[in-house]
Length: 204
Image 1 (tube, rainbow, N blue to C red):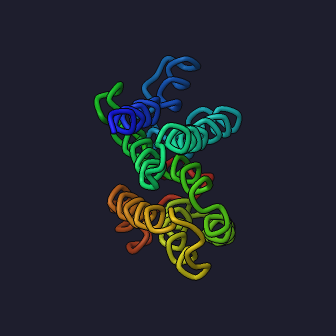
Image 2 (cartoon, rainbow, N blue to C red; image 1 turned 30 degrees about the horizontal axis):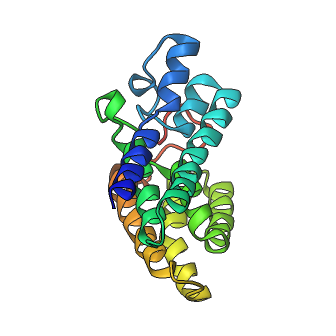
Image 3 (cartoon, rainbow, N blue to C red; image 1 turned 180 degrees about the vertical axis):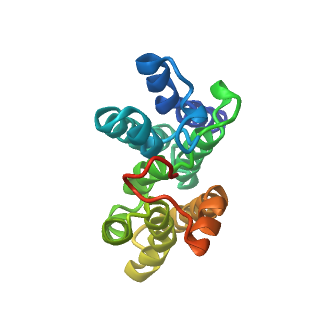
């Protein structure tokens, strides 16, 4: 029990490492949260620092989610909830990082890493939708929201496939709620037609 709590805390601390903030400070000596959209994530890093740093931040943020879930499988014992809780903790850490005054990103890249470990086929199907939507609309935020919305739907479509299905499913529902909460301003802008598109200077 104590080890399970510890690994969840470690996952939060891992998620709290904001690679976009660290990279912006290292490359340009700036706080990325004061530039572009103000979001500490891969998309804003792409816009503020360029393709190379943006892609690197994307990969590192995904890896945070992957490592957190793998730690949960490794140290969680027989408790099917621990990997999912570790994944959730890493996303919470990304969104509200303890090292950076609880001002983080919106957690989509880390979510991809988490859900790739918990439900790879459903997240791949949802990922195809994300790619198509972003390619057509250039709204990264819209594609991201569809990703988190459709992942639990695809999980139900493919059906239970193990004892950890329901913990993983409910984790995906909570992740969806987190994402919609964090993107609430983007949702308003999309409805109003004011959302910045991929390639513009603003955005998520």
